[in-house]
Image 1 (cartoon, one colour):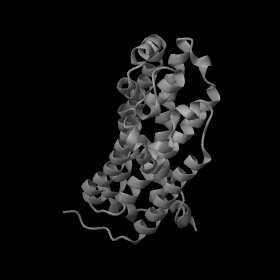
Image 2 (spheres, rainbow, N blue to C red):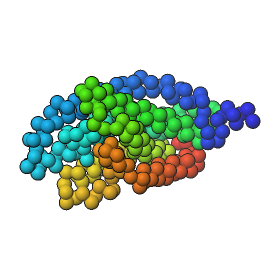
Image 3 (cartoon, rainbow, N blue to C red):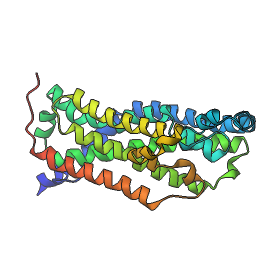
Image 4 (cartoon, one colour):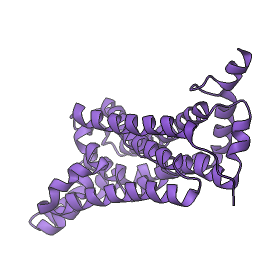
Length: 279
């Protein structure tokens, strides 16, 4: 019984591993959080300073109008500006440090270095290892999203435009965005437990993220191809609509389903795979 408690149970959290994972990533987390907070300051500033001028510039020009509403956001309203920043490549890249980088490093990366076997030889069950590192990743993603939205709020408040949206809706956007990147993280973990080398796991995870991102971008910029947006996970986080008061339960349900399926796959495969010797 003491050994089971020390292991955190076959599928439970391991407190020691949790603390060590947090400690090992604290500097990286701080750098990414500062970067996202700084980025969060930018889009409300652009809207408050140039929003009306930009709207007048693009009116009557269909091409400019389409490009100004990249990814479902725009610079003509506070909600649109925040939505634009929320799905911008800067946001995606910084969040991917943990949504993709962490999962492939803690399983496939450790396997490649030959250190995963050493970790699991200690009193840590495989499912406990997976659950603990997954919870750490989910926490990191939650903190980073909160940092960006905190930057949005601070910037909008200082510019006197925060009253244009209900602050409570920002929490809904945080939750919706967290589910999106949790889905990518779950997929990255599923890829990571499937390989003994970092490169294929990382390649698959990045491929899924980039393809779904590009699909969403094409659908938002090309009206005739708007139907392909349904095949992108990004399409199910409609940031502007959420901030304007509309959060579709079906969008949330689809993201939850993706997370559940990827987690179920990893929890089934990880305990059953042999650990290859490093080469």
